[in-house]
Length: 120
Image (cartoon, rainbow, N blue to C red):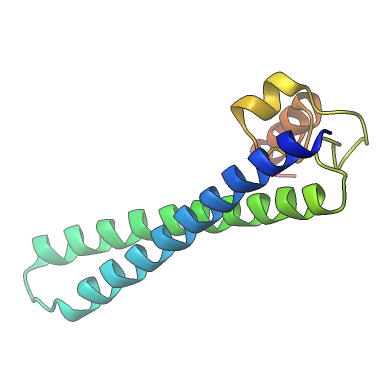
């Protein structure tokens, strides 16, 4: 990969990483706000519980994305960016343009997702 392109991708991934860290911080502040609320109303408690579940799911997704961005930065630094971690084949430029933190080719990613959906 040419140096200019690698520098551009590194900046984009670094921006993604920073944005995800900021999202995590905002989530922690929101979580602290939720903990500060106390009520005995059953409707409020149910709403609070639902909001907590949504926040927890969002945080899990943000942390998962953060891991993939870290992997992509590591791949870029080790000059393996664009290589599928599963099969070793080249990840298409079209896929990397759409999902610059992709660490798997489309076929391996679909296979991974299918296995996760099946509970494997």
